[in-house]
Image (cartoon, rainbow over all chains, first blue to last red; front, side, top):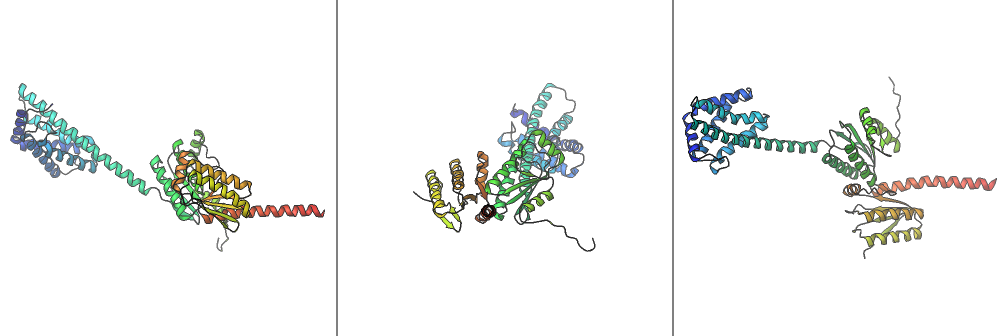
Length: 285
Length: 137
C-alpha cells in the first residue's frame, strides 16, 4: 500500500509544521522505553536526524520506503539499528525508536475526528510500519554477522594442542563439540603429531559439558585417523555422569584406552614408553 | 611404466613412494617386494607414503595385501608418514586399514621393527636353549 503523492505532501508539511513538538514527544517516548541507557542529548540528536530524514523523503515525493527518494532515510534507519544492535539493545527497543513516531503524530493530530484525517493517519502509519520492519531486518542482519564473527573467533582460540612430555601431546577440549569444531580439532591434532613426531596423543574431555553419540563419533574418528598415521590416542577426563551417559547410550570405545584423569593418562603413556615414574624420598618430608 | 624403487638398508627394505599410485604401479610394487624379500632375506619392510596426496581403497587394499604377503615371508611391514588429510579421508570413507601397522615417520618405523625383532630374538634364544636341553638329556 503506497502513499499517494498528495498524502506524502500532506505528511511532509505536517512533519514540518509541528517539528518541535513531534521531536520532543518522540524523543520522550523513546527515552522511557530505553530506560536511560542512552543519554537524552544523544537520543534527541538521533530523533532529530530521523525526523529530518522522514521529512526529506516525504517532501521529495517518496511513496514507499523502497523509493529512490527514501534512500537517505533508509541509510539512517540501518545505521540506527546497527548501532543499537552493537550496543546490546533488544529488537523491541530498537523498533520502538521508529514506532514512537506514530504515537507522536497521533498526539499532534489531536482530536480532529474527520474521516480524511483518519485515512491519512492509517496510510502514514503503514509507511512507518514498513520503516520499522526495515529497522528490524537490519537489526537481525547485524546481529547475525556479530554471531558469525564470534563463532569464528571461538573456533580459533578454543583448540590448543599442548606438548606434555617428549613424544606425548594433549588436546584439552573445552566446550560443546560440533562437527565444525571436531574437524578443526582433528586436523590440528593430526598435524601436530606429524610436526612433533609424537606417537602418543591424549584427548582430554574434562571441559566437554555433554557427550552424545555424535560427539563420541567425532572423537572416535579422530582416534582412528591418528591410529592410521601410527599414533596412539588415549581419552581422559571422563566425568562420572559422562561415563554413565556413554554406557546408557551404548557407545563402544573398543580397545581405545580411557582414563578418568589426565594424570592417569600421562602415567599410562609413560608406562607404555621407556619411562618409569618413581617417587623419591627427600630430606625433610 | 614407472616403478617404485625398493632400497635395502641392513635388515630392512625401504620403499618410498614418490609417484602417483596407479593400480598397475601398486600391483607391480607388490610383486617386486615379494621377490626382494625372498632374495635378500630381510625381516622388515617400511613403506613411506608421506609424498602421497591420495590413498584410495585399492591402494589401501594393496598395502594390506603387501603386509599379509610379507608376514608369510617372515617380514614385518610398517606403513609410515601418512598425511593427516589422507588419514581423515580414509576415516570418512570408513577404511581403517586393518592388519596394517603404522608409524608417524621412518625413524619411528625403524624403532618399531627393531622392537618386534628384539622380542622375536629372545623367543628364538629360548627355543634354542630348550632344544639344547632336550639334546643333552
